[in-house]
Figure 1 (cartoon, rainbow over the protein chains, first blue to last red):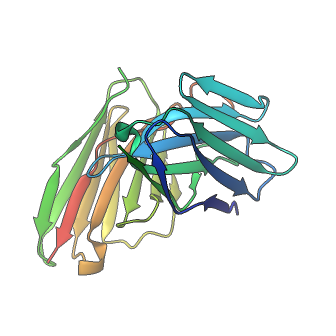
Figure 2 (figure 1 turned 30 degrees about the vertical axis):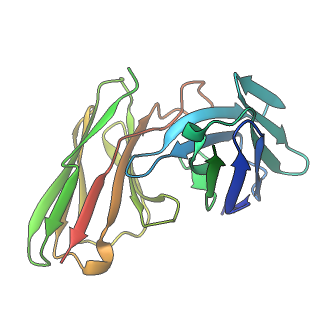
Figure 3 (figure 1 turned 90 degrees about the horizontal axis):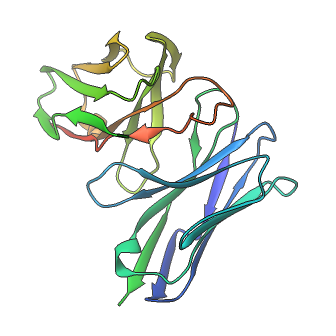
Length: 111
Length: 116
């Protein structure tokens, strides 16, 4: 089955700096890669996703890159703000409906 | 509207109780999911319903019983739970077709379950 690894597990950055979270996956059949943000006491919220036919996608301060050959994808947050502090999960989908999650990254943005 | 609602927000139950968690969405999604999330861990898939039929059961103990009465509702019936079942239970929904541009899973806020 699919195995998704995520690094780092914790990340602290100064406000205004950039944050990068990296994930690798094992199943070459995976074709959809969403990123979720989870704040304390809330459910995961989709922030950006990318499909296997695209190498990069950007939405304002958030971008995701995908390297299918190396089986890794990354989340980039620029100009970080305190409200970006949360746990971020990457995920990969190798088959219909199944999502396999990474272990999460706790991002802290220091004002 | 990309909202998935879940009730109750919090639930405390004893090991002999029977309770139910409810999930609702009005996005026209025909796939609905139950996940279990322990503290500081990612969500773990429990069940998937596709077109109101159970399509995936990730070897979940029978004390958890899912039900999908119609395309908008998903229930999780709980009976004889153990303290280790305490967790955040998340519902999600999506379009069920693989490769569809609209197959994103949207999560509800979860039900925080405590089993005493």
